[in-house]
Length: 198
Image 1 (cartoon, one colour):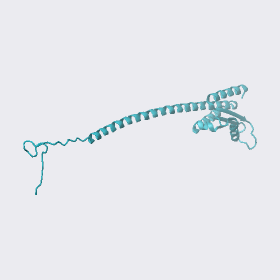
Image 2: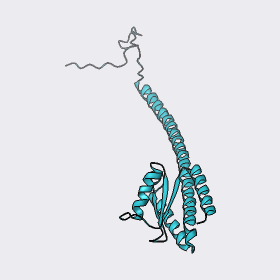
Image 3: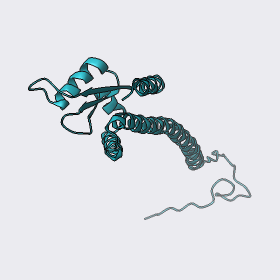
Image 4: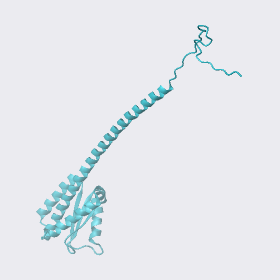
């Protein structure tokens, strides 16, 4: 890769990191130390260069294979679903294998990965906004339900109380002393008197 192309890619990676907070690291080697595999080197660089931040590391051992190992930091794996990251890695390696010039493979792969991560970032942002909007809708719906249920309960309780109050009302007629009228022993106050004589 020419120095100009390397600087251009580095500038793009810096802008990407400023926009998304995701650090992209590229390591290319022709020879590795004995007993150190490409994946081991990739994980070590991830710990060294990225640490606890979200990031992705490309490690390419040019003497072994034309596509790199791609590892994601744990923070990035928590940020996006694992299947989406695996799909992004697959799309990146597919794009890199289609490039005929070995010099241009890595820039193409890095750009594809950054574009895919930007799509994932936008989707995560939309999900979080939709989630908040959905929460508000659920809260408003639940509040409306409570108001309607409260009003219905209040109407039912009032009707029950009215019925109970109406049933509880007893009308008592006062005892009235009435004198005999027209010589009748039961006139006035007593209407019927039954007696049993033996």
